[in-house]
Length: 378
Ligand SMILES: CC(=O)N[C@@H](Cc1ccc2ccccc2c1)C(=O)O
Ligand SMILES: [Mg+2]
Image 1 (cartoon, rainbow, N blue to C red):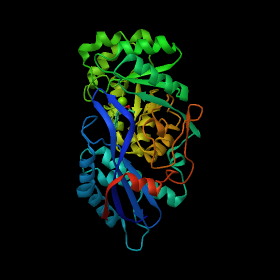
Image 2: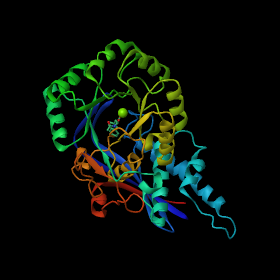
Image 3: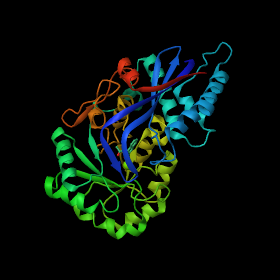
Image 4: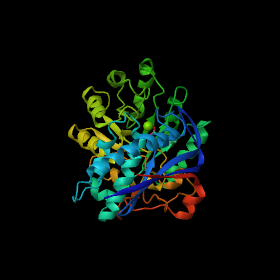
C-alpha cells in the first residue's frame, strides 16, 4: 500500500454534561483526527490525547506537532526505503510501530497514525478491525464512567439514569473527600448486585491505604489507578493491604510495563486503552500477555468519537476482555457523534462488521465540528 499523505483535522465537540474527575472538569473535547490517503482506501485514526496534559503527559497540540515534524517524516522515510525496485514494496500497518520507534513516547500520536494506516489497509483488503484483531463475539457488554458530582443526590440521579439505560456496570470517579460516601450511597440505593467499581486517576498515595481499605466491604469489582502512574511498587504494596482488586490504567503504557506490573503484583486487572499504549496492535499484545497470566482485561475509554469507539468495540470483542468496558454509547458524551451513533442495546454495544473500522465520519457533521484541517504529503 502506498501512503500518499495524511490530513490532520481538529474538531471540537461539546459534551452533553461536564465530566469531572480527580484531575479536572471537561466541558468539550478538542480532538485530532487523521485521514490517511493511500492508493487503495482512505483510513481514519483518532488521537485520544486531551487538550491539556492532565491525564498523561500528552496533549493534542503536541500530538499534532510531533506527527507533523517527526512521525510522518519517519513514516515517509520508511515507505521510501520499503519500495524495492520492481518489488511490491509499500507500507503495511505492521511496519508503523517499528518506523516510529526512534521517536520517544508520544504513544497517543503514534496510535492515531497506526490506526489510520491499519484502517486504510483493512478497508482495501475488505477485512474488519474485529476480524484482524481476533474478535470472538459480535457485541460487547458496556459499562459507564460516572463523574464526580456536586452532591450525592445528583450522583444517584445520574446512576439511576445510566442503569435505566441498561449499562451493565457503573464506574464512579473518586478523589479524596469523594469516595466512601458516594460508594456507600450507590450501594444503599441500588443494592449489592450492581457491578460497581471506582477510578481514582492517581489521586491517592500509599499513605491512604488504610482509608482505601474502608472501600473493601462494598464488594467493588476493582479500584482503578489509585496511585500515581510510576508508583508500580506502591500499587503492589497497596494490593497487599486492601482486598479490592487493583486495576491499572495510566501505569500501563506498553506490553513491557504490563509484564512488569503483573510480575510485581501491582495489579490483578488491566484497563487497556489502545491510545495510551501506542496502538491497537500493542493493545492486542497486552491482551495476549494478560490472558497468559490469568489477568482480566477490559477496554477503557477516552471519550472517543464513533471512530475510536468502533475500534475499541472490536478490541473489546477479544476473548480476554472478560469485564465490561467503558465503551458506552455515543450519547454518554455527545448529543451528536461524527459517525452513526453507537447505541446501547440490552446493555451491549454492537461490534462493527464492515471493512476497516466499519464506520466513517458523516461529512456534514464532520465539517460542522471542524476547527482546523491541514494536509501533510508523505
Ligand atoms: C471514561 C473515563 O473515565 N476515561 C478515563 C478518564 C478520562 C476522563 C476525562 C477525559 C476527558 C477528555 C479526554 C479523556 C478523558 C479521560 C479513565 O478511565 O481514566
Ligand atoms: Mg481510568
